[in-house]
Image 1 (cartoon, rainbow, N blue to C red):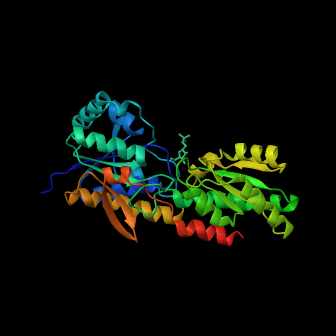
Image 2 (cartoon, helix red, strand yellow):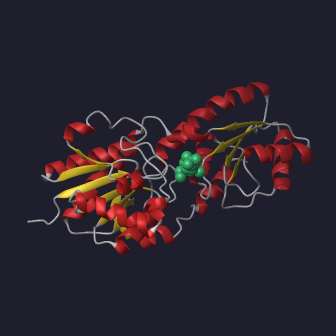
Image 3 (cartoon, rainbow, N blue to C red):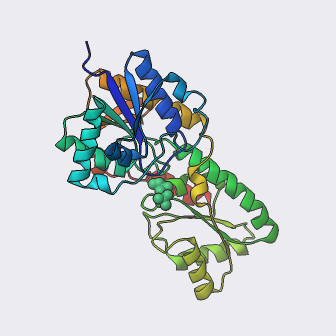
Length: 325
Ligand code: F6P
């Protein structure tokens, strides 16, 4: 007999396309094993306030293709306090919850890590964030959809940029990590990619721009991560105009990247992670985060996931430079 009979699931932090597919996989896998599943609404705030409801198989029908999260989400300030976490624990006890599955990014994992140090309820983390910045997994849920959305938008911008021969700075999300910018830049053949991790020299950038215009090479799309060290796309465009007299247009793709129907890749990834999270709990694994590395399910501690940085793959950064010449 396994000790676990009631599992709770929540989504927290920024929503990501595919979270619903992960919730569905958790509920269906648990139901297959005759476990009860409880949905916690609005992330850790819902855990504190007892916003917890039973979910059965039918509750997750027809959601695999939907963006957002049926459980809603929040960035809880109260869960950062000892008192908040104590209240959350009481809510879980009141609902006889034996284990929790939390879907989110580093903020979600940080909350989980502190909680399990204080209270004896097993947690399993599933990486859900468009940023793809979680250590221990090649991909996070939502990243693939987000870059496809950005690529689709930039393909459209390229048509008008090309017709008018205009330079566009296109801002994508990523405050601290340039995964979205790098993959979107490669996927759209951007002339240049401004990442948060690298310090782009604006003098060099303008020289490169002038060189390519002499060669009549079309250089009209620059992808900027919102956390670039020269500022956001608006600020960079302003500096380039004031300092070098180069005019440009700016498009901020923003929260468009967070919505929409998840790609097939994200649906499969989310299904695998949701399924594996329940299986892990049934195999007495606890306080771990799941990922997929080299197409195999991987496990890391919360501590590793939040303290180790997933570095950008430098060969991809170099490749993007080579291909944009
Ligand atoms: O972490 C996901 C993310 O979409 C980041 O890429 C972005 O910087 C941030 O969330 C935006 O957060 P909010 O929706 O709270 O403004």
